[in-house]
Amino acid sequence: MQIRDMWRIYSHVVLLLVVVSSTYCSAVNETKFVNTDKSKFKILSVFGHLGKSHFDVFKPLLEELARHGHEITVISYFPRTDSAKAKEPLPNYKDISLVDPKVGVYVNVVDLHQVSHSRFFLATQLLLLRSMADFACQTGLRHPLITEFLRRDEKFDVILTENFNTDCFLGFIHHFKAPYLALSSHQIMPWTNEDMGNEDNPSYIPNIFFGLTRPMDLIDRMKNAVTLLLFNAAYDYWFRPADQAIANEVFGPDLPELSEIARQSRALLVNTHNSFHGSRPQLPNVIEVGGLHIPPKVNPVPKDIAKFLDSANDEGVLYFSLGSMIKSTTMPKEKLDAILNVIESIPRKVIWKWESDESPRKMDNVMTRKWLPQFDVMNHPNIKCYLGHGGLLGLSESVYIGLPSILIPMFGDQFHNSAAVKTRGAAIVLDFNNFNEQYFRQAVDACFNDTSYRENAQRLSKAYRDRPATPLETAVWWTEYIARGNGIPYLRSEGADLPWYQLHLIDVALVLIIGFAAFIYIFFRLIKLLLSLLKGTAGSQAGKTSKRKKD
Image (cartoon, rainbow, N blue to C red; front, side, top):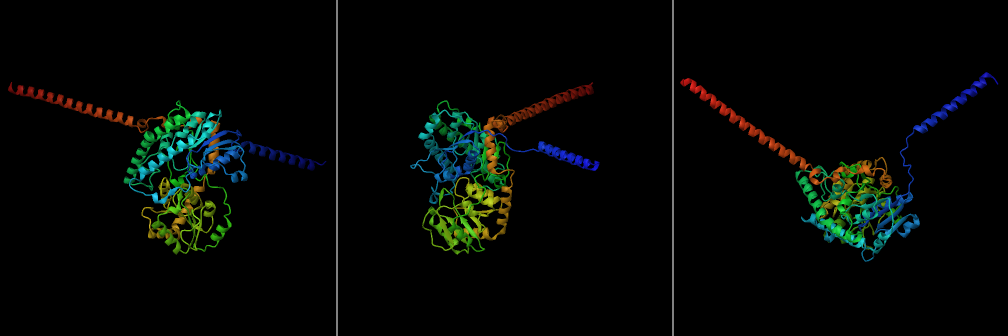
């Protein structure tokens, strides 16, 4: 073999070694941000509220946890349907169904004749929250399946339950002695912020009970601050004692104070996003997963709906839905006539969730359906405007897609959600009490023809979507993180354990005020004494001078 051939072989071997070595080093130094823990956990999820939208927010999380191999037990009024099971069997997803035909759930139950935004509206809202809490606790905790379930000797790695209008379901935390992950299907309730020690400053953070736009003026800040104090007081001294009574019956007299259990929350998953509801300080264990319910893909709509939408001209289509709880067919006649008169006169098509087989008025440009695949319909390119009530699920979908909105809030957090999107310039908000034909016609014209609303909606959509991970990925990670228990000792805010007067530095302020007052008092006493001494000295000197003159 010639020297030249040997040199060629040698150089190839050296090159190969260099490539292999560099590849190995690269693989060693590469950082992979993945969860390598393959543990399978037992997870209990408790949803005692009868509102479908509250459960629908977190349903994707529960099913995804089951896909990850975790054993999920779900207590709710919304068990998986037979069709869902046939489409995707999840043998490790177990329902404990609270469904009772005599009870029903909160679907198509709100009669719009009963909706009135009077001066006592906030008091009515508080009474509604309390009555729903009483009903949920009485019917849910006394269900025979719950009684049977509590007799079992089961162990869970983590418990998930919603923080809304009652603490009575927190008895499960004490009973099973498991870490607790709180859930919120809407902006955080003020008492939940208080329990976690999360910032809730009324000077610039609008509370969930008012539809206040940012920035707030003096009157708004006064209303915001007073309402926050009153609702927190009502929850502490009215809601919690009633919850405690029923919880003690079910979970035993040794049950600790529910307020104490509430403060044991390891983290909170909340269905908001700063682009939507505004920027605010959050604890590191308060995690925004707004849009968690939004599916990863758009499905084809039924053929009849597709044909109707496809045939729309360049003027576009209005999508009209008042959500799962409100029954559109109960709309007061004068308001319904105003809507129909405008819809009938515009050169656009309208697709409308209407809970009756019979349309309110025969119109060629309108399609009504008892149920609509909302997200899929909203994604049709011919849908140009969303007319809704400000419910967070539908509004989040419109924000995600980038649709401008016309919103008529009725109750609950709908005012707050509507105001948040209005602040972003992507929605027109109408007052239900003063709703009329002219009012509505102007809103429809602006939604379709004022390009600023669409531009702002598209801008908001980009910000809402742009995140380091999807809401579902984030929620799954945090659930598994709490179940693993590694961060549990470090997550809790010390502010949650402070009494209110220490948290707001009232004791520090009093000490400083008393100390300053004492200093001022002593200072003036010393000045007075000094002046008295100087006056006495001056008088003595004057007397001596006078005596010398006489001498």
